[in-house]
Image (tube, rainbow, N blue to C red):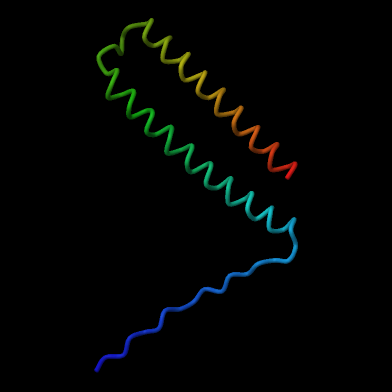
Length: 90
């Protein structure tokens, strides 16, 4: 009869310090946000390549893509700044 290994429990450490917990949560959130932003940019780049592969040499199309990209980056910066301000004031 084969013995089964018991699952190893990873102890969770919760600090009684609220500030320390919030800082830890903020660091985890920022790591997730960076990873998520990278995934979104990669998906958007792939989508542009798939949908708009015919008009690579059209200057108007290139300008329009640059403007859309600039608006998206501006919106992302605004969301990031807003999230950071909210985390600072929590």
